[in-house]
Image 1 (cartoon, rainbow, N blue to C red):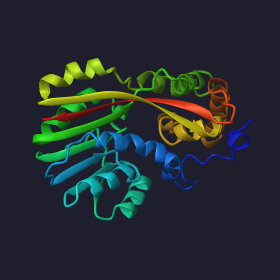
Image 2 (cartoon, helix red, strand yellow; image 1 turned 180 degrees about the horizontal axis):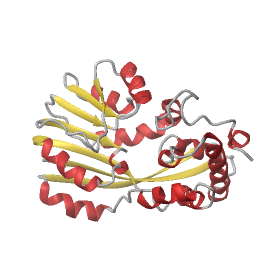
Image 3 (tube, helix red, strand yellow; image 1 turned 90 degrees about the vertical axis):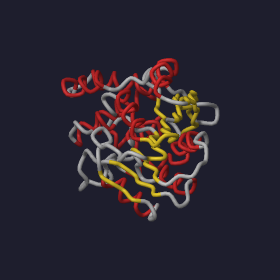
Image 4 (cartoon, helix red, strand yellow; image 1 turned 180 degrees about the vertical axis):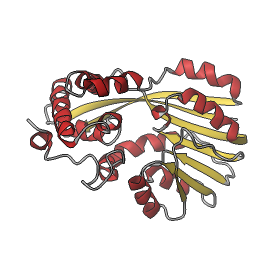
Length: 275
């Protein structure tokens, strides 16, 4: 069975002419309401204050940038992302903001930022703990760093990724990726790390439960996000086979409810730090 048979030919790269390493904004935004919910919850804990400069790290297609622009009218809003596809959508969506194509692992903000917002982006970095500390240093006194990271390493969705990566002709390429993926820690670890560096730490965890239309939707969710490091190393034919095997495992891990939906558990950790 191919992914085309299983899912109606899922296009993970936004068109055959798009470079494989770029993101597919259309696929990502299929679950815009669910993805933006976490950004709203994070922003709700950033106290309103006079704000002149806001950075949105890993801004994607601009759904979080749009929230920031509405919350901080008059401030300069700058979105940072590496995906040309995502940035094109973000520029059209939030024309009053500025956008920069840069890797947030290498990029450094100018000193004096009022708010740095990192919604579901820092966990892609090899050393997100160090990144948090240098982002704090870039804030003005009293400024806020707001971070949300998925904490789903042990969820069935991610266990299935690792199992499929290890069980196929691509194993030699994908196993190093599986072993190098960032493990997001627990709240106690981040509190102990960050409390000495901040005036205030507001930290919490949430487990969202998203009703989706079957295992195919779970595949599409992660093909637009967490599967990217794996899919970037596969040929189109291998991508089809990988996704078909992944879907089969998900169908076992996420049984259908009486109404036909499946429930995707999605743990996330949040913190808002005041310098």
